[in-house]
Image (cartoon, rainbow, N blue to C red; front, side, top):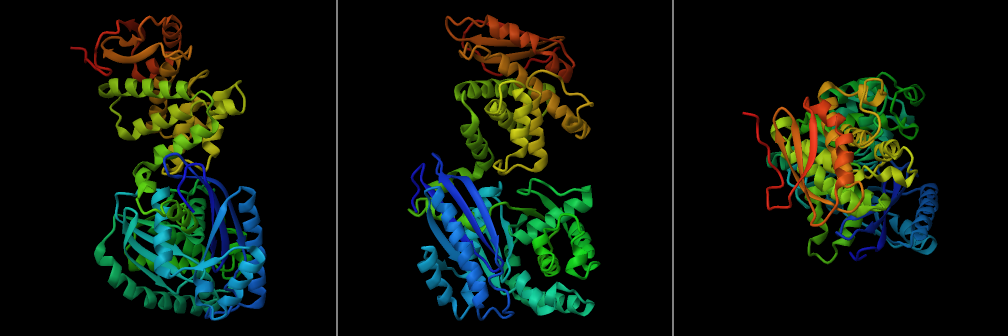
Length: 531
C-alpha cells in the first residue's frame, strides 16, 4: 500500500467468528474514504475449544469467504492486505489455511500478534471518534481473544491480548449456546481470573474514555438502545451505553437460557444468539475490572486500522493530521461526493459562520452549535443529487441515512439534518414529527441555526459572491450589514435575505433587516448591545 491520493486499498480481517472487508480510497488530505464494507460469518475457530486446530470444514468456510471478499475488493481495483488474528494465530495447522489462501484466493494472509492487533484497532478507533487528544481505554472483544489497550494519539501506551472471546467462552461454558446457571458463574470467575493481571498492568495509566470496537459490543449497544427506547440505534458510531444499561442487557440475556428464546430479544443479531451470553459476561467483566461507567462504540476497528497503517507506511505521520478534526473531514468527504456547486456551498457556510459569530451575545451558543451549523452549511445542498425539487427534504434524508459522518452522535446527525431540512420553505413546527421529537433546547438550536442558514443562502442567491462579509447590530431591530464586492450588484441577495428572515426573527424575538454597507475595512463580526 501507499498513501497517494486517489489510490484504492482493501483490508481483510480474518477473525475467529467473521471475516471483514473494508475498501477505501485515499483522500487528498491523506485520510480514508470508505467505499465498501462486507462481512462473512464463518466461525473459523468453531469446533476447537482450545483453538489448537482449525477443522477442515472451518478452513473450507474461511477460504470460500476469503475468495468472495478478494473478488469484491478486485471489483474496486484495490490492492489487498489481509491479516489473521486469534483463531489462525493459535492454530497448529495454520499453514494449511495460509497456503490455501495464497493458492486459491490469491492473497498472502499475514498472521499478526495480539499486541499488533491492538495497535491497529486503536488506529481505526482514533479515526472514527474525536478522541485523538484523549487517553482511551480500548476494548475489542473478538471470537477468540480480547484486546485491551490504553492509548493517546495514534500510538498505544500499553496493550494486552488475552485468550478470552465469545466463541471460545461459549464452547467452554455454554455448549450449543445453552446457558445453565452453573456455567454462568463459572464463566464469570474464569473471565475475572484472566482480566486481573491485565488490570494490574493497564489500570495505573488511567483513561478519560472507554471505547469498544467489536461486533459484540456494537450488538450490546443495540440491545441497550432497544431496551431504553424500544428500537435499536441506526447510527452506531459514537453511541454510548452505561454500566446500568449493560446490566439490563445481561439480565435480559440470562433470562433467556437457550438460543431459541434469545431470538425475541430486541436488537440482537440472529447470527449471535448462541454466543451473546458469553459476550455480555465478558464485557461485564471488563466493566467491573476497569471500573467503567460508560462505553462509547467505535464504528471502525481492525480493518480500518490496517488501511490507515498502510496509508502511513512511509512513517511521516501525515495520514494522521486530520484525526484531531475527524468531524470536519467526514463532512467534506460527503460534500465532495454529492455537491456540484462547491464554491456556492463554501460561500454560504462562511457567511453563516460569520453571522453566527456576530450574534454570539444574542444566542449564547458555543463551539458545539457552531460545528453543527458548519456541517449543515456544507451539506445543505446534497439533496439536489436526488432532485432539485424539494431538495431541502432530500438533504435531510441523505444526511440522516449516511454512515459516513464520523465523530458525530446520532442526535447530532439528526440536528444537522434538520437544520438542512429547514433551510427553505416551511418553518419548523410541532406538526413535523422529527422536529416534535426534539427536546426544547434542541428545537431552539434548530430554529436559530436554520434561521442563520436561510439568511446565508439568500446572500449568495445569484452564486456570484456579491456579498463578501457581514456584521450585525442588535437593538430594537436586528440589523445585518453586508459588505459587497467592488462593483457587485447585490440587489437580489438583499431582497431575498429580507424575504427569508422570518425564521431568524422568530428565533431571536426581533425583527430582522438586511442591508448593504460600503466595502470599507470593517470587522466581519460585531455585536453592539442596545444601551
